[in-house]
Length: 295
Image (cartoon, rainbow, N blue to C red):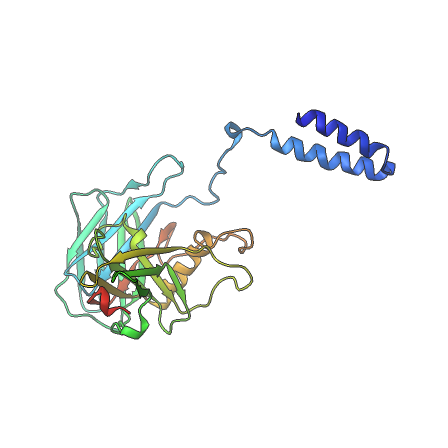
């Protein structure tokens, strides 16, 4: 049916259009039909422009004594996961002494117990020795501004039947200080920095503005319905200016990547050498609310 109708269309156009316009239309249709013939089995992933030796995640926080850092070898295949890096030497110096990390039972995750008081506004230096190479990173511990009821990154409304509907946008712009947030309710677990795969529960407040003022961003959000006495636990996690800019760059390539987005670029972390990722140092405030207190 498509071929018959197309033939009829071209026949009609042939006798009603000037030759130059007719030839131009034929070229456009030929290009259109040829592009539709490409099968799904011909789709290929391009080789990465740069291959990294190591990826670093995690760092130091002031809320828990146990600290966690994950080291992986990036995957070059969309069907495989990053490989854990074993037997690395990992230390963090907080400006006063070294904190030595040991590999845990979970491959690629290194842990240390930190009993020292926070060293606010000071640089924490990470050193990793692996496979004959040394990687370093520095981040600054910024003190968190305690949670204030008027500046929570969520909206809650009461329903006619006495329930509370909540909306948590993944990104909120225009805050004075950048922060990560973890908002726990229902079956969502408490914040645990050793659980690197649970990033879907973070949301972010940015001190930079929206990356695209002309076109709407992807509307990423979580919603919930709770009873008035149900508890919502909120963690506010400080991040340095450098980490905030790194996350902003990551989201330009992921959450905000679309038809009108900027030209893709490499997102640079704070790890030296042929590496990727970010070693971060964070202060944390936590507060629990009943759902009825969030209006």
